[in-house]
View 1 (cartoon, rainbow, N blue to C red):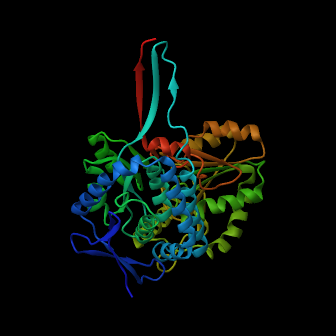
View 2 (cartoon, one colour):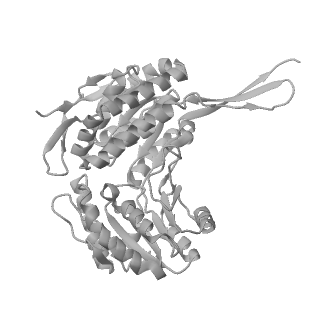
View 3 (spheres, rainbow, N blue to C red):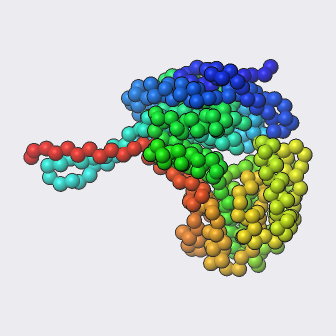
Length: 467
């Protein structure tokens, strides 16, 4: 039986004002998975009004109470993990093993920030005799959260939970391609006790819903994860309204392998760095910079292991993304890059992980974000050249270093222009560590304690008294 998914506004399913729905189809076989409410400016206004009305009571709750509710949400997500895995796999095409990891991460956001709500959020300042000065952090009010299609549940909670923890209310706009897990977790949040209107979801397209959300006068802060093109538009609207925004955008991560590295570990890590989630990760390591003396050894080992990785991956999530990646395969061939593995599209939305050699850093395949399982391998001769190649990019989200020389690791980490640097292991940023980019990869930080600061505004209070 086909399920129609309405918006989730003020603690209940709310039909779209237009009466229209968007088909959500499986990237594996094209079957119809669900029908998603097609939102309008009117639906956004309804959700923002609900969030605004709920804001005072939610903010006035003791932080411990908010934290307890968020931790309860984390437990509830785990209890319903099978359902969330099913939803994520159906819409994104992820294999179950990967969806399980991301559902676990979503639960951990609830536990992490639920336990941090009482952390010190201000400071006392020495302003001299007769004066007591202190700072306090306060919520913005209504926060708009716009998430992409590659990791819908995880990225929804990555932004929403810290915002909720410090007393904001949220209106989430998920991708129209992958909305069901976000709608389901919002309903679950209401069931475990979040006040009506605290956690709202409006589904639909970016032009109809996303733009309306960023433009709404009662939305006082925005978190956006997505493409550079869309991020520029979100940033423009936010700048005109003079509201803060976090932009987590694209990447072209440089992964540096030095000759003294543990090559076996470097190969395994580099394979996951570009192929995980079929390359649909903004922090993927898609430029592999290898010291020339071990270049061929690394490439041969990667080529040997890539076929086994192919069997663990799902398809690209949308047909448009499949077409984009297929186009880049043509571009790479026209530029003279050599595919040692892959290089041709598969059937449907499936594309085999592809490794290119003969790449120079000025090729499009080395400079533009493909957002697919495509790796550009570039040799270097010394540390200075490696750093220069890594930093010669419009992006600066993630970078990796593989070496046994700990002094080199620290020196190079300091020199790399990236928001996070992984040493001897490529992994997604820990929940405990801030995550965000340099340059065109955006600004602002998600994750870690820093996220709580991102979703609060700082107030100074100065009391003068007689001695």
